[in-house]
Length: 273
Image (cartoon, rainbow, N blue to C red):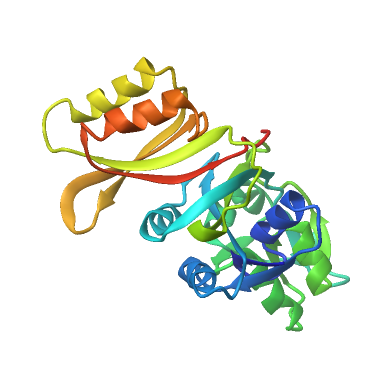
């Protein structure tokens, strides 16, 4: 089964895929998240996987927007513990390393370690991609920050593990399919929706009151600007419950009275955290 993700082989997204799926899978990496969505739209892959939020840096806005844009359905989620590793070519020691390349967020999360060891961080587009580039070079005074899976794929040594400032570093990934390919028999425990409110006082409050009225526990709420309507927003909400539950159906029906649009992004098993 082909599964699309953003990044190079060894990326954290691939680790999430291999942790979530117990059967044989074929992860296929793409440079951009939009390319992941295009591959799914064109049936080049069966499933897409993208990160949507991190416990330290917050939401991944571009991916959240893509889920709203496309006609996909979220069928699962997974929380991956992020263990940043310092990688280098075989035989290189920590004291040899003067510069490190990685994604800007990974560099920021490992800033204290880099300063302590006198290492300069250099931004790259991708964590696993920086490891691939290093493996193809002969540089012995440079390292990368990436996953342990990257070290395995690209034949690099793990110099240090867990070099991030905060060890409780988790990224939430969502697993999604085309709406026509929603599998049967899913245990639906959590639902994600997006809605835009009418432009009048108390509109958002009225929406939130409906969730309370129907006893729905919100696990997340965030807003994203609507590009074609300046200073208007789409609200993304996750809550516990299935789209087949009567109180969820009733709540979604009432929401339409206070909103200009409501879209169900998915209903899926709740991941353990």
